[in-house]
Length: 113
Length: 257
Image (cartoon, rainbow over all chains, first blue to last red):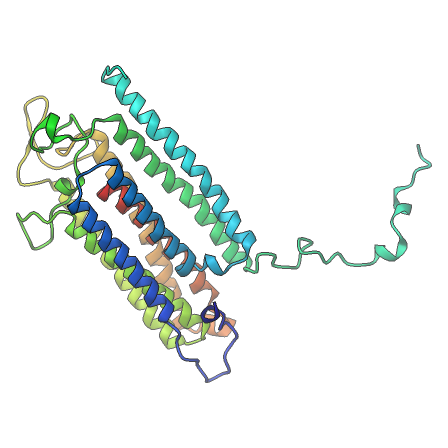
């Protein structure tokens, strides 16, 4: 994106105009998603569907923070993959341990499943 | 065997040539400086730590029963099931005794998102070598960071102090608030995880504020101006956004789900 690349050192005594449109756009997206989460937390009863909506909205927010604010979208492909591939390992960890939690609960409380 | 000489297989003309491939050194294959790259890898490792914490939360939470109105009746604090977050976090400073579910945590989330915006504005000003703007936005970021920390201190003290109504514990005693071995909200581990996860995040915010104060002083002294770039602000910015990112996840898994 052109608005990210004005990194060339400016002449002494001459400061370029700020280019902040994309920052505020990202900000309003983040605020909007957070507001949406609050609508869901009060308008819906707790359920797996509601939790899935929260997780998807959270991933959206994370995407905007990492891609725009942390600038990762504008880095080289190699750097993007070096960060993203290790993160994928966590999905398995999460699924495995949440399932394990259910099993521990059932074992301790003596519930036949 | 001594008749085989490996050096002869390389033509003499090639011996003196410097190796100039992408990964042969002297380059930045990722087009990011050493410092920024290492900050990224540090943040990756930190992400694993936080993910481990939140995954632990998921495991412990699923070990306990979820609150169900049909089985348990009207909601009250009990060690039989995991508490519902909007019943635990429903206090707001200055609105004593009123039920404001998740109101304060919403405010804290907004403060942290806004501090991320002022941080990115500081980084942008650094790209333009605009010292006054960098100072201005760094100060705003420090202010929002400190506000977030104060809010968290309030949240903790309210959590430890407890709600108006005590909870009757299993042994019949009345108990207010929380510590590491007992709490009025639910299973013991609920409070423990609250302290560990939000505490670990708060420590990160505190470190971030310290780094920002350093950046502000160095900017004011003209250190970065003399250096010719504001890369330090950029690196601290990466760290600060990461702290915001972690809060987004803590917020979802601790307060919403």
